[in-house]
Amino acid sequence: MAFGVFIHRSDSIYEDTPAERYQFPPQYLGRARACEGDWVIYYEPRKMPETRGYFAVAKVERIVPDPSAPDMYLALIEAGSYLDFANPVAFADDSGTLVERGLLNEAQRISGRAQAAVRSLSPSDFYRIIQAGLDDEHPLLPRVGVGQPQTWSNELNEERAEFRIEEERERVSTLISRAVRDRVFRKIVLRAYDERCAVTGLKLINGGGRAEVEAAHIRPVEANGPDIVSNGLALSGTAHWMFDRGLIGLDDDMSILISRQANDVDGIRSIINPSGRAIVPARSADRPHLQFVRWHKERCFKN
Image (cartoon, rainbow, N blue to C red; front, top):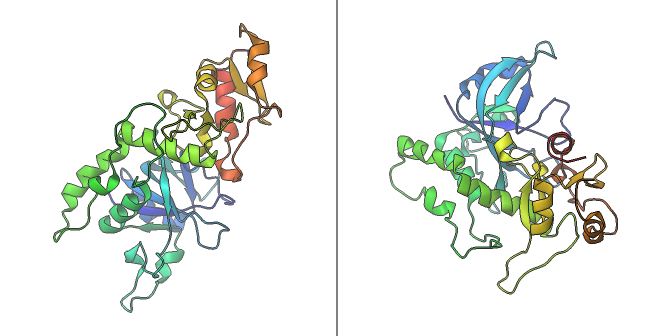
């Protein structure tokens, strides 16, 4: 097993769903198989407009031939392992220092490995990237509760003389911590929606500086819904409660649906923003993905 990097573009020609599967050609089979049972980091190329750089982490469950495409393969992602970074990590810092040091050749120049869609990643580079991506130095304050969130700088500290790989591997368990994942998910969803409720359109900040809006999963975690921003909605407490109970939902065009089983349809309609549609992020990749919207409509929404 080994860590790796998967290059992914939001406009990819491949049949990729980062939280579920990654499609690749046969020349990368050996490298991908080395990642089976281990974690990979997703990277968006620098040539992409407004590139996110290293933007997510996920665990590869297994590699299989793609049944729908001859001579192609799929890296299947372990359910519940995908996590968008709270802070996308740039390819290089302001001084030009690469975060992925393994891309440097003996002359300390960027090697051809940087073009490889699938490549191995050293443990030190892996921990450096996830520390930067998940560090929570400036967390969005929770709507309720006063506890200070644990920071990743305390979880993953490279400032030591000896790099203990086994010790660091144990710390990967933090990636599956529900508390950590909930905190990161809240941050990425509220940032994408500018802390504004997608249903009401209200952006309310209380006297303590906390956003009065919550990060809701469209497809719940309990139903294998991933912690990806396109499976999220920023919702006020009331809208979140109604959405989870199927009293409101979304159509494919983001129209807000109201269940006929609701006991106060007119009251619900009165709090929906005037457009009648969910207010979604400006970045298309952050908007609710139709597969999650349709899952909620078919499995949760009460017609």
